[in-house]
Length: 222
Image (cartoon, rainbow, N blue to C red; front, side):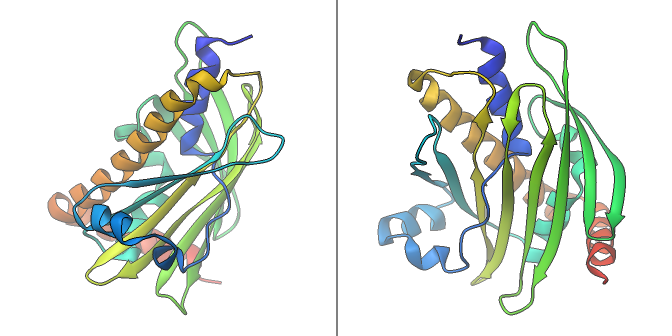
């Protein structure tokens, strides 16, 4: 049965449900037209068909005017997500098994239904050979999804940062293929919100981003 809640939950879980990060040569895997779109400030969306799944992987590529450290620091600060991510009501850190692992409780708004609370495990690591960072995550519990996993990959590119934000959801109910375009738009909107928040903080809130950088550095101390 297709429900509005099913579609909304897919949209919301783009916060926390994504596929494993692509290789660091993602830039070279894109063509010249896609490069031109990125340099013009636009996103590039690539879908990947997954066998035995009605939903594909959604890969969103974009450039931001920030360093990889700044970009990863903003993303790692999950409790700040409700300030700029649609439909995200609250995020709390429930436990930290190690410095670079955070288990998070997300409260997500669902029209006509009670809010969902999902538990997600985030793991951050540095990529010293590339000057970048990867934040991967796995959904541990969700009322409206069978599960999911994902990542946020950021590496330097010229004077900017190149981000690959990928998304995959294993829905808890059957969702018609006709709704796929709706889901694609929502993935792109969330990726745009993340990029906008990164650039906003860099330009307008240097104290906040410095604090986020310190928190990220602490998480990476092993």
